[in-house]
Length: 91
Image (cartoon, rainbow, N blue to C red; front, top):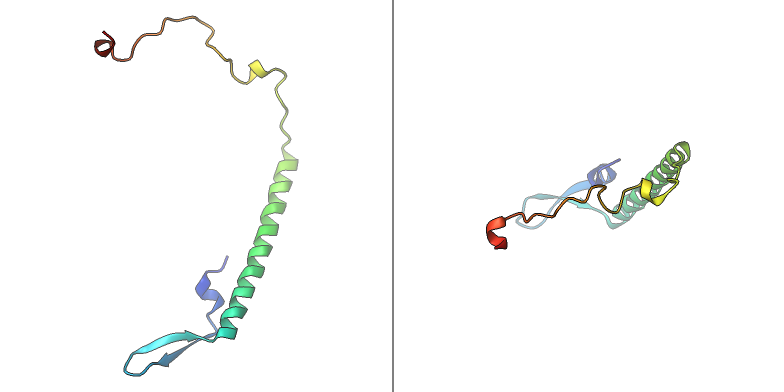
């Protein structure tokens, strides 16, 4: 993917403002063209990403568990007493 500067690489020229140093300048039409190119590239990358995600999703189907308890039991199997973390503060 290109950086923002790469879209403007051929369109930048330098101009001198009165009593100032040379500064990079981009014409409005060139900036609009660079933005349109960037948006078109972003749309292409989005399309390729979505296609890859759909292909990956189709390649590895996931099976649902037979029972809800197979995912994670609601309570632990043993009934252990609950002890305070800081006994000095519990008293």
